[in-house]
Length: 308
Image 1: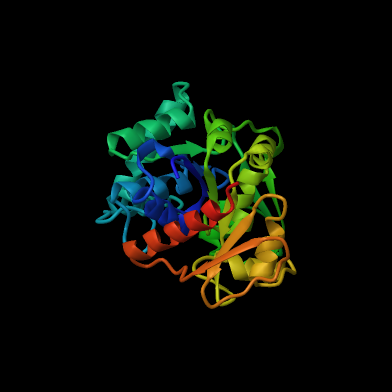
Image 2: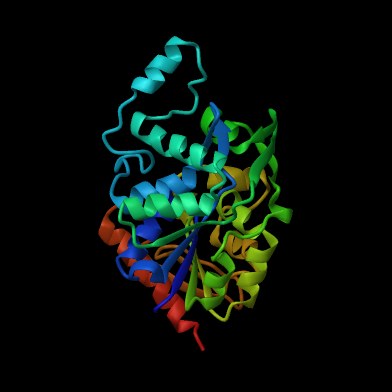
């Protein structure tokens, strides 16, 4: 396939994009990234999902944890703690450079899209990385501890609060970043990464023009399930589904993406009984690079089988 678009967020999404980047050459692969996690911290604009993807594709990611930089140092955090600063969100010394440069560029009038493209070029990343929007969108959660911004829930509280509802402030009026709609409409395949559907993919789908482009595209849209054996590989997906009264299975994932996807790739040992949906299977746990490439190939093969 010559042109592939992947909707992505988080560590699981970055793993699939890395696999796809070994199959789809250069800018023929476009990653549209969740920015609902973005927030300001200590006066800096932090874009966690964009940064995870930048680190992963440039070979700079911490291999063990999947986020942050390999070989990071923490002198800034140590000095911050000495002065009584908030230390619940870790900013490594190398990681800090991205946030400082991004914040400065935004203050000078550059867009998040332009800044992200500049970082990718500096690190020799061929994949085109597009924020879902240059407009601010904030993932907000209603919990048993009150209304929490995403990073307060995910990082500070480590997903402990029970969630009753999720919404995406600003999404209804947000405009897709330049190139997003065009990439979706020109794609030969659109892949939804095995990111958390409710926290990492839904923010993209909440931008009206992105959802509309997915409905209009002639390309097959295939999602990779984040579940293996009824459990999320990483993160709070299964816990969140239970709190929202959603069965933790692939049928629920398929129904959640109803009207968006044409096919669902699931783990070899799992099932999905939703009628009218193409199902592909392969081992979907992505530990090694070979695993990531295998899952990417299986997703593309499922999409290829759905093309007219």
